[in-house]
Image 1 (cartoon, rainbow, N blue to C red):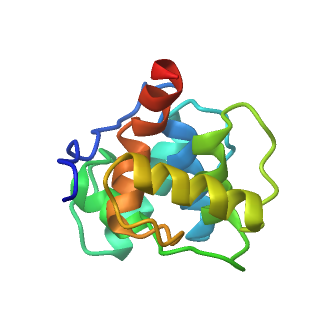
Image 2 (image 1 turned 30 degrees about the horizontal axis):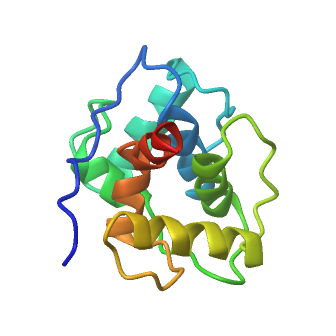
Image 3 (image 1 turned 180 degrees about the horizontal axis):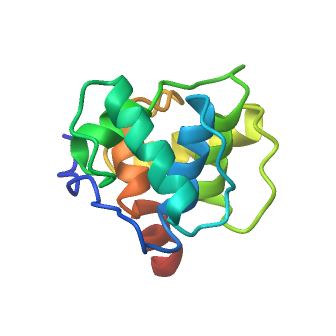
Length: 144
């Protein structure tokens, strides 16, 4: 039985820290030039609005459920790039993720999925992304 997931977080200009770096990696994965610094400033806001326009969403610069769902992409073993960096950042904030979905990333994802009641298949799909950006990893690290 899957655990109840928290709703997607609402993130906007002025937000700092989690999940802003993950948002910034996802924007980069979608072809937007942003600095991954954990600060939702003007550059991140411009990229969010551009993404929202491209996806036919209201371009208000607020990242809510619809925008998160437009940004995420399924990643799994063998994937490379900024979306993978976003996943890796969730597990090791402050580290310099390599963007390669190798065995260590897969192991971390499977353990995380199992711990939050998701199928532990190692693929970061929409439910796994949602659990990640809602802060479930941090909650697990604090409980440990």
